[in-house]
Length: 206
Image 1 (cartoon, one colour):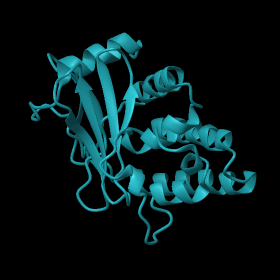
Image 2 (cartoon, rainbow, N blue to C red):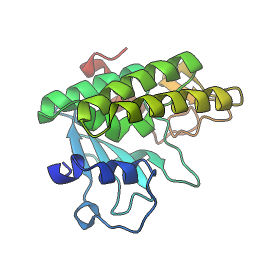
Image 3 (cartoon, rainbow, N blue to C red):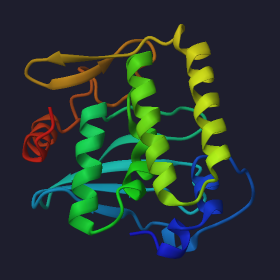
Image 4 (tube, helix red, strand yellow):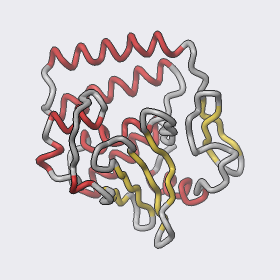
């Protein structure tokens, strides 16, 4: 897990969300992924690197080699790997298993949620707002401004976004559309669909 002095640092989160662009290096995070144990067999590994220029999410089943399932950068990103219901279930499990506040995994994993509609984005943003409040790192006026701006920006952008979740046998849920930007798609055979779907079943996700 990331050291607590970083998690409770506003500067850390401003850098993580690319709101603060400065020169920095968190050496303790270099080649040191954060392990989130979800079940006895399933692990998520979040690797932000030391400078957050390439934030990777990997999945590991038992002792098999981990496989990258999403990444986020500012050039050729493919972050959309979690459905809204899955995101909530995973955050809840991480908080329980690692005995940490829910806002920590919620904010760390937020960038990997694949939104498919304006209504869903409003729901996710409202929950993210609650998580940001829970962190104690943001002033009330600042949170209100952030939420309003995020919704306004989304309304402007959403008319041009083509992304949707579709259930495809035998794979399960996959992302489709010109703006899918996801490794969780029907053409990506290396994606660990059987293991991933078993994990979701174990977590009680829809």
